[in-house]
Amino acid sequence: MVAKTINERIVLETQPRVEAGRMHSQRLRAEGKLPAIVYGLQGASTSISVDAAAAERAVHSGAHLLDLKLGGQVEHVLIQDVQYDHLHKDIVHVDFLRIDPHKKVHVRIAIEFKGVAKGTKEGGALDIQHAELEVETLPLEIPDSLRVNIDDLELNGVIHARDVALPAGIRLLTPGEQIVCQVKLPKVVEATTEAAPGPTEPEVIGKKPDEAAAAAAPAAGAKPAGGKK
Image (cartoon, rainbow, N blue to C red):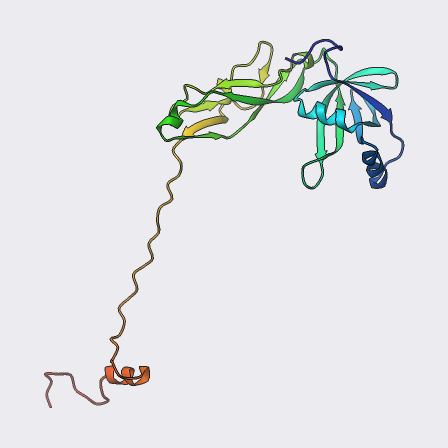
């Protein structure tokens, strides 16, 4: 579970950001900082900068609820959006959403698959179709992940969203019939056979192609064999 005390939650120091634009963002990143914005709770949108390394650790930690030190105050926020560079390698911008820790929020929680599906020992393959679920919960009760044990999943077995056990107080928003994972046989690629070539005209040995064609064709005015003269 996400830590419930300020001493255990991730805290990010921020600085106000007045300038905007690509050049300013590039200068920030050159200084080891990231441009960011915080908004929500009927408050004004505030442009800020955060330490790049600390922000990346926060994003990759899987934590949802963070604390921002902003203007001498601590604000509870969720990581709302993360923008990466064109290689999808480095973070270039982060959006933070202010939240009331006493009001429920809608968040997506990653699914952590545990074990080895029984059906894979029978030639099946595990097909993960959705690796996260959307739920409604209090910010302080957001789990880091939802664990799903797949040891008993047999060949052609399916786990739906409604089958995933949720901690008390958390409501599933993802449609219950949505398939999370299943075990099925790999698709068999049918071999395609080329159509057999049609009959060809016999080749007349010792003659050129034009001569062979002429030899194979009946002479003009010739009557079929067995016909009257």
